View 1 (cartoon, one colour):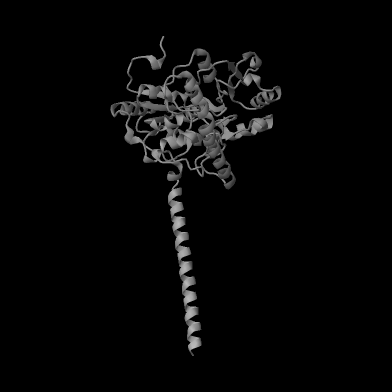
View 2 (tube, one colour):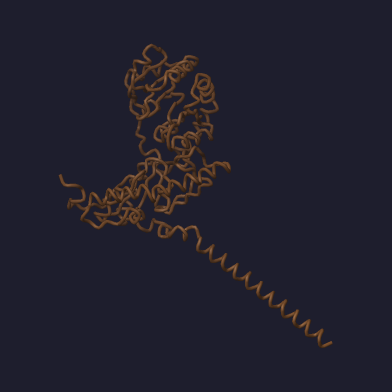
Length: 398
């Protein structure tokens, strides 16, 4: 089978991923075809310049920071340096690696450097929503489709349905995603969860790789895989214990379920912190996990206040003109119809960094002020000298 860049097929549009590397941008370049990018998480600082996307670190948290959109001075200071470092790393390290790979793959083709291909993106569809990820200004070439992965829930199998229906006080769903293995928790932390769960009336649905670890606990149903989307739709689910991944957080918000988050990486911190700021979730740091901390956290997030706030967040998230999928389809077809829709790009995409931040204008103003001040100084000095000269001349005449 020939590689994609050797095929004679013509495409109307190419879809790329927007995340940690831009090496794939060579494909739309070779095809001379418009492309859009999909972002599965919040947009990163290095994505801003190519899209003309404002990314003021005073209120827009970096994807790896543990901040919300309301930051203290220290948090704004730290967020600014994270933002600057991320941009530097991708501009001078990541892109260099991508350029080396491309040159190795296409030794006989004259392909521009990645840095010269970044500004050609027609549109970005980002799996975020301002109710969860905070409001920020977006140019027309950036469209939020948070919740696009949400499908209508299916009927649970008899086993899960029976467990949920028979849970008089509700169920807590515990899952740390597809990468983090809860079966690898140190014994003291695993026992801390088990002891804390033994103190509450709710039953536990625990997604864990080794089900035998929890087999003797009657209030816990364990499985290596669970139909999370369908479970969340059941009215007896009272809480979601999560690592704070955006997809799981979105599913919980869509069903009005409070979250107890244990973030460990990247945007998980800011996702959980945002829910915590809305009092629809609480952050529990991994090093702080012990029986007392878990028990206190459960008491807070299982309270009526947090359930009510989660329901308010649910109504905000669901109140839309069109579904996320319909929005995505419309904009994909829009870019195809209008041959890449270059008019969606703000003019700032073509500006240099010093033009964008008006440093050339500021420098011109400062130089003008210095010139004016210096000219005034010279004029006054000359005037004083003249007055002194005339005064001395008049005294001599007298």
